[in-house]
Amino acid sequence: MTLIIDVFICRTDNYGYLAHDTVTGKTAAIDAPDAGAIKSALLHRGWKLSDILITHHHLDHVEAIPELRREFEVMVTGPRAEADKIEGLDILVAPGNKAQIGSVELAVLAVPGHTLGHIAYYDAVGGHIFTADALFSLGVGRMFEGMPGPMWEGLLTLRDLPEDTLIYCGHEYTLSNARFALSIDPKNPALQIRAAEVQRMREAGHHTIPVTLAMEKATNPFLRADQPEIAAAMGLSGDDPVAVFAALRRAKDTFKG
Picture 1 (cartoon, helix red, strand yellow):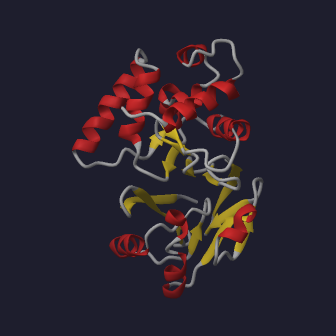
Picture 2 (cartoon, helix red, strand yellow; picture 1 turned 180 degrees about the vertical axis):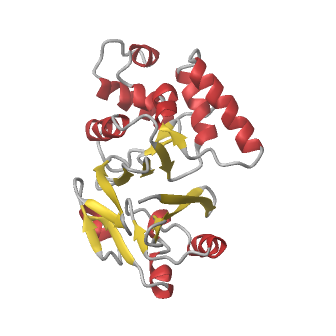
Picture 3 (cartoon, rainbow, N blue to C red; picture 1 turned 90 degrees about the vertical axis):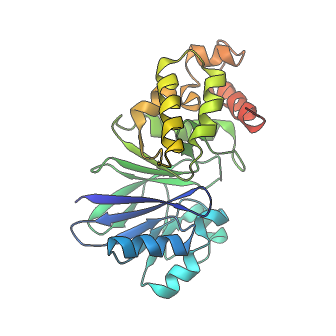
């Protein structure tokens, strides 16, 4: 029961993912941002699309569902809490449920905040987590619908996964996220190394994803809102981590660096 993950860019900066089960040959698109890019990746790999797993309702994650449904016999799985905002869902899942790609089970995790019903898909056996816009490398998604408390709790759920888990997020934002992270935590040696690495990767046209959870725990300020140095950087020493997280998100919203 092994997934092969194909990573490619969709639209401008969306990541597209195909997850292929080597046992059954089933292939899932994780979100549906761009039908053309997904079909091109399928053709390149010689795979046939059987499933689409949706994380949240935003257009740049669901727009390709109708076209892909017309061209492939697919089952579309998505968050029950956002079913009224996503057309074409066949299977509704909620946190605590399992999603399926052939022989591989993925746990459905609650990661609200960017949208209220945002979910992530976790392959415990293979060590993959598809976080879409809940968690980026060196950042998190804008809090469009949720509140800081539930969003922080969702991030703690992700942070508690094994450190060798590979994170597959929704966008290539890592370079801009690195600039903000360095403005908060400039003396962090792991962050300095990661930021320089990201700069080199982007200059070479390479993806910065996937990234290990261990790296994110060491470098992503949003996953470290309960650590004294991050609270101090926000002028909130001794304050509740939720308040620190909220302050970080507000600061990122207006960051111009």
